[in-house]
Figure: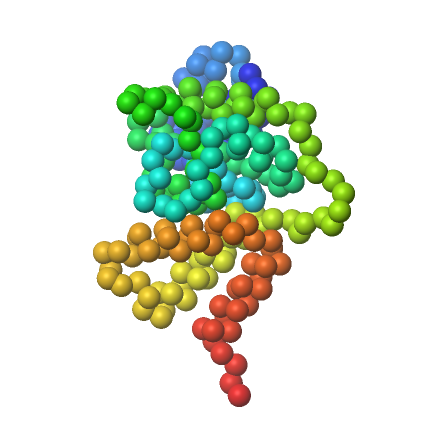
Length: 215
């Protein structure tokens, strides 16, 4: 990360706890990254302030999510006004399907399909390098400024409210398909790129449907 100017490391339930004494020697002098790293209990909490979330994986996991390569993702991140997060999974197992579903896009490195073995450090350095190549790009100016994109925390509020409304209406059936159906609902709402004003409007619509006014 420090090789390419990335400073904000966020860890989700580290396997060996945090701080980890073994991390210092492995970081080869990049101590500032470790000192300022933040730990979260869930991926949702870790990306709460990020309007743009990319999940790194070589498999779509049955999710209907746009797929981009590192160069395209780097350009999008560099030209976006809001904060972006790039999710990397554990070395051995990668990201879980439910974690990938949080993202608006899947980020995949184009490697040999007959040998897809790529460790965590390799994946991070490939993505970080592409990000660093586009450091001269700026957010476009001029014309009518678009509304700020909603953060992941605001999006999670909409998703949670929709989930509660659907569960109350008996939408999740049969029960064994509930996790997959929830992931589909999440990806539908995540891809749109809502502004906070639009999310507030949608939440008001859901409330009106669930609790209609008495005439």
